[in-house]
Image (cartoon, rainbow, N blue to C red; front, top):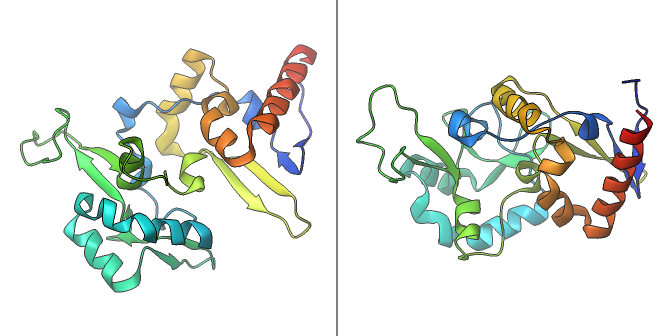
Length: 211
C-alpha cells in the first residue's frame, strides 16, 4: 500500500494509521494493563475533572484505600512534568480509578493463585456501565490508542499511538481485520458526533478502494 498523506474530516486532522492499522483490545489477555502501566495518569481536561469530582462519591467504595488517600491529598488530577493535567496515580503507576477483580469475577483478589494477575477495571466506567453515573471516563482513555492534540488554530489532531503493552490488541485486530477507527466507533461518535464519524467511514472506504 502506498504512503498516505495526513487526512482531514471537518476540523480534525487524522493520521492515516487510524484507517490502515488494525486494533482490538484483548482484555482476557492484557487484563487492562494500560490502567497500571506508565509513569503518569491519563490526560484529562478541566471540564472532565469537574465531572469526575461530581461522581466521586458514587465510585469511592470501589477505590483502594491507597487511591482514596492520594485523592484526599492531591485531588483527582495533577499537573505532570509536561505541564498537562492527568489523573492522579498510586505508587507512581496505577491510575487512582483502577479497581480489580479476579478471574472468577470477584472483587476480592485474595483467593487468586500466586501467578494469576488480576483484571484491572476503571471504577468510573464500571459505574457508568451499571447506570450509576452519566460520566464514562476521560476521553483520552476512551479513544486509546488514538491520542488527541489541540492546535492553536482550532484544528484537532488525532494520531495512532503504539505501545508495547498493546501488542495483543494489535494481534487480535489483525485476526479480526478490525481497523482502529472501527474499533473506536463508540467513543469517536461520542467525541465528534455521528455525522463526523459517517464522513470518516466514507473517506476510509474511498481510500481502501484506491489502494
